[in-house]
Length: 433
Ligand code: SF4
View 1 (cartoon, rainbow, N blue to C red):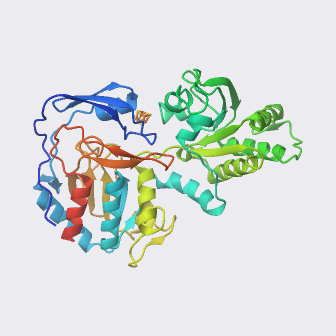
View 2: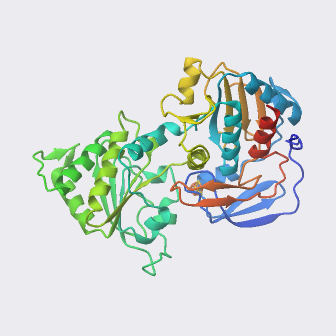
View 3: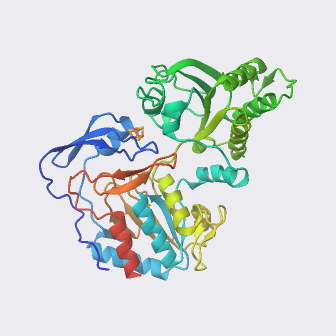
């Protein structure tokens, strides 16, 4: 396959245009109701969106060229240099993986051919979920189900800090399927430092705050579980929370028609955090004996939900897969790219960050190839840098929402960046191996 046409410098875009129902790639929620107007090459979030979306879409497009050893080169030469580094490596590591479904398909394909390893930059928190899913299984739900049915939502993380429009899009939704109006939901906040201002609204009834340290959330959930099984608790407090408050929460859970417990694994940064997720999932399972209850794991930024799904359906395993033996092998500890770089097992890093400029590669001395956004933030110059188009802004594509149930089509917003898509660049490198 020949290399895609070069052209990383912005070309004049045609007339202004307004795009409606644009999906936003800047967090795992993938809100698909944005209105984006374009004037020449300048994008503006005209309706909906949040501060993070505005910061992402409205970044001015600046000229960016492929580089080898810091020197501008043609795209063909950059592709040849990248292929040479990968060809000479015993174990190339394909990391970052901030891309869409098609980009990730290309990553798996080239990693298979190059006998490398694939691992997303945010895998560590995903592994906390995976350990629970593998060992116990779980009942989880979707954003749509929460929006239409949930009358009790228990948050164990301040979701608004990570998904600014969660309440607007899901909790306060006015057009729910079964009620003809907003569902009046009870909101329970377990933890600390919640931003409560935007919580009140048409979809919210009672707001219950249960204050404790994040590392005590698992204990509170375990106490709830114990009481639910009919066993007594002797202590007056659990994790600093009065027993009466936990009993009140159990009563609310038992009265709920459809309860949901929400967590974001990346915010559980304390030791053995997967045990807290474990307890949440066990409690959800126990509640389901009598009534509907479900878990909802959020996060999924930087295309991590797409990366995990594509890796699973292409290789049969979730992320942290090695193709070194010629067949896919999965090991969530052994094939973590930070560990492989530290131990010297990986001798070449291919880093993909096509969605945001912030997904920086780890510090390493091994030859490094970066396929990044035009304004990628780099602590040091990689051996090869190739600017690529962002799916959903400068290229078409698809991305999976954090609940893993919906794949949304991404559009090219027509600013004619001249940048090649991650798929085109990865396919050209693979062809040159
Ligand atoms: S909440 Fe997330 S997906 Fe929605 S507009 Fe903000 S950054 Fe984009």
